Image (cartoon, rainbow, N blue to C red; front, side, top):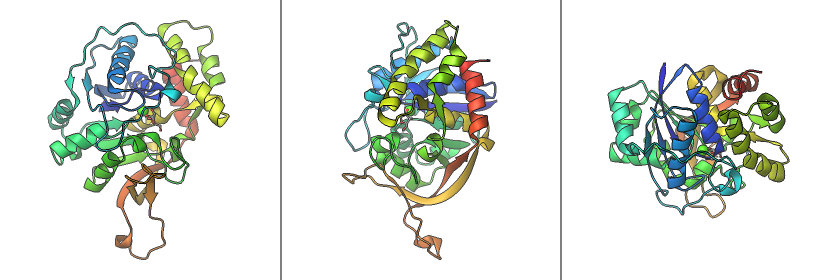
Length: 314
Ligand code: RIB
Ligand code: CA
């Protein structure tokens, strides 16, 4: 089994990513850390506890991370994910308590199993930046760091040019790119190809009234309404589950290495991932840092994996 650590900001697709990880025999989920993002930190932590209890996995610890970005103003995305971050789903009051501080656990998990753990970050990268600042080199004890974030040739989703996780804490992403951790970026260029239609959800869940089916139906409703209204798509994009799927089967995506950096201060462009595409003869003249980016994805195989494991058998 592949040991995995999830760092999440607990919107709907984060919840679906956790469920995919729990439904995957290849994955040993060591723990979850929460960070502000789609919803405030407290709500993100509550959501993580509730989703684990929904899945009857209160054996998995939840650690509390950062409640605000390194430098910029706090932003959330309740318009997309709903006030609680989990759409209109109503889950019981969590009985679990958080197990501690995210940074302490990240260090312990990485030092305890050097070179083995895949960290999957599906929110703003504040926790990862803070732990690397606190203990330089610690993230290179990870086997890999998979980051859902950025938009390279694709339009943004929170601004015309920026993806939400990158926009919410551009300084954190810039710092991690600059220090050169062992990272693969999974940008909107890939995840915008992973749209799950509402009718597929309904067909797969029809006739089911178990707790998971009710949760998926209610949690996805708000995002589907948002996407239908703003993008004319009656469905939702599986941004965060894509990062989990890549930890399960690396062959699902094709990667390219780009020299890139992140805008941290622009009024219109904060959070934009800027790729140096100039046809320069010498790479060392490029602006930015070489980063591995997932740019192609086997959509059919991903959708089969996700729908089979999260929405269940047909
Ligand atoms: O831009 C999509 C990303 O931002 C996803 O991780 C979503 O959950 C939000 O955090
Ligand atoms: Ca997320």
